[in-house]
Image (cartoon, rainbow, N blue to C red; front, side, top):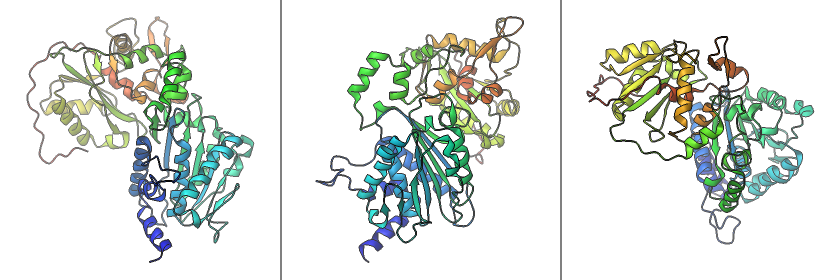
Length: 485
């Protein structure tokens, strides 16, 4: 078998394994080579490629029947290797999918020409499949199929949006890669979306979150984040960045300044003063260390999904500590199987010895509580968000719980989960005719592009009622036929 045949055989193994492609296609650690000082991709890059491979395997495209588009987005600070990732994706797709067609764009032509496309050309030269393709400033293509097997750079000026139309690929992959996506007009994405209807389509967004509007924001932090596989990368956690320079920025501007949030932490600018919970309070809870008595009861809150786009979320709190136990999320589409959800909740309560579980009574919430109590779990309480508030200054139970959570955040500790951070700062508020505080509804939030605060509601539920004693809990025994999701 000649060298090209061996490479082709290896590429076949990489079809659903982009991480393997990146590991074998480039000269990592080769003395005298361009990557002599590097052993392979960074941690976040490895995780991203692993998730991408899993998405390909789940869809199992057969070359005939169109599959659901793969949508992935990365919001990050500076210098984490987004341009390199864009190049790896281009090389992987072109090397493993004959007749693939792709478009690469960026927020400006200089960014596209000197960084994004330049990175693609550089990594293609280093790739073991680079000799298969011809690379120019206008196109990367297979010389035997110049018009049907290529990827090309394209300016993203809004008046040029129609240039993104008509990219269909019934028997292979149509893909789009957008760099510095925060500044790209929604009109561009809207037209590109038309190329995601056939074959095995994919779209990737990368950028610094400079704006709190637009598709990039909605995909990573807002109303569409559950439709995208999104990741937030803090530049301080990357192996390739200048940590000393970032620390100087933090010292000069502050950890939760917009300058540091966007350029280092990969988070959008701070919420406005109209938000119910201010950013300083959230940042303080993230940074705070707390001491919790050993006999402090563990309380959990379960927010029920309103629809397929939302998640059911279970969060835990022990006194001032809401960071030590990771949250549990159930996709909204899976919540239709109430018996499975009951099993998951019961097992979580048994695993962590939950003293009290408060469940959002919306939709399936009531039946979930009934079934859990039938299993002998008397430490489960249904909470109606629209119910009467124990404190007359709040219009309903949801506003009351968020009010208690706002007070708790001044002393408590939360994890640095970007979802929770965005959720806590998401809802606005107003006053009704009785001068009571009314928290912004989920429906109104979604109308302005802000996602349903599932994590925020789950944490707020842990403050629905005081839980002051820690009684001995009986073991939970589930039927042997039940299986967790």
